[in-house]
Image (cartoon, rainbow, N blue to C red; front, side, top):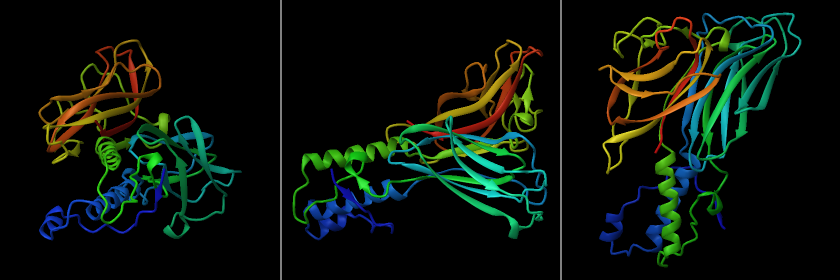
Length: 341
């Protein structure tokens, strides 16, 4: 095993043509550049998985008790060692608060807590505070998270991104950069490089979309119609449209050389709160084509489906239906979409 602290600066452009033109063999000197570029990407080219901010001109008051504010899910890429969350907090606005806390939960682990006190401050930018949380995660795995407000705590914005390792480590998927300037590239060196780049290609793709209701289960939208209905206006049916609430999924050039499609995961946090009929959530485009659909929603939790999107600009919407039984009701808390093999 070896380690290498790759430079945080962008590596110089690799040019195989330049090496050939300058009569340098494709050996150590060229391999070193490829190795360093790969390690740089592994350590520092990490993705953001959510950004969310409430309207600062119309912030909600804090609430008593324990309230989940936001949910989310994403796929941690190859080489990701942790997530870093930046949470902006508005001042506690209720004098009865004794220990206002904002919790970040990863999976089922209550990971970090940010404490606030009541100080009678106004909702101005100067009085907002920033909490910075770093939590360990497992690379190449699905990570679920939630933010909970307790005793009048007021989280109003969040941004979460991956962090790479402190150094490129061959035991953790990095590439051994210790290659002589004139030494040949050995089979073992090729193996390390190909495995690292293959894993990054397969698992470090884009996070396409995150949505969460603000305020958790108490204010999450519910649906009981047998016709697939848009989750954002609870009215529109028949697919996505630029004139109704929709999202844009940009997958242009995200396909591989051997495929015209872009594999995705469609993840939904939901619960069927009453009834026994089949309730499902679908991702649909502006031609009313079903792109992905979950299995039947029952207990509170995450439900996922895989699909292949065409490479391009896709106008899409998320819709819910409950098989026509008015007695069946489904509550929708969050939606996440990411690219993955």
